[in-house]
Length: 151
Image (cartoon, rainbow, N blue to C red; front, side):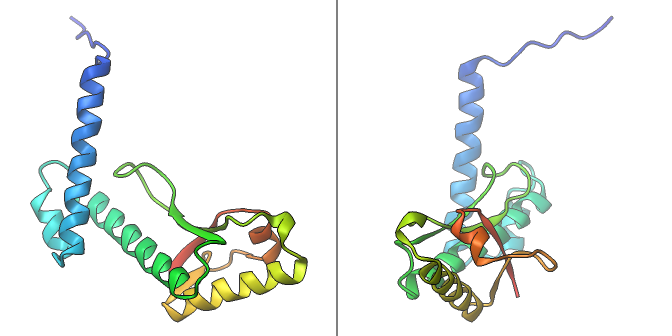
């Protein structure tokens, strides 16, 4: 006899997603308070796999550090640092992207801004893109999300 499966009700799905978000908010809170990523991964191992927790915390720390570097360089009004994907689901890519209107920037301003962003991130131990990726001021000016990584 074949087992029947029934689609989850919208209420049950919403409850599950709310609970998952709450767990990740708690993970963030603990990590910001100084609890190690390994300790957090151990604490939630019954609900979320260790690799997912560690990858999430690694991406979130990179995002926070990149945002701080952008803020310290007073560039937060022109660029955004974010992360792709939904919290707790799959790999997240941390990126920087232009938020200023490219039409308001000359080619020289755009190249200068790109250099200032790259320099600010580099001083925080962060590089634009992955090794071998070709990142240009033009891609940045086009508003593409430029992936970030630790140096």
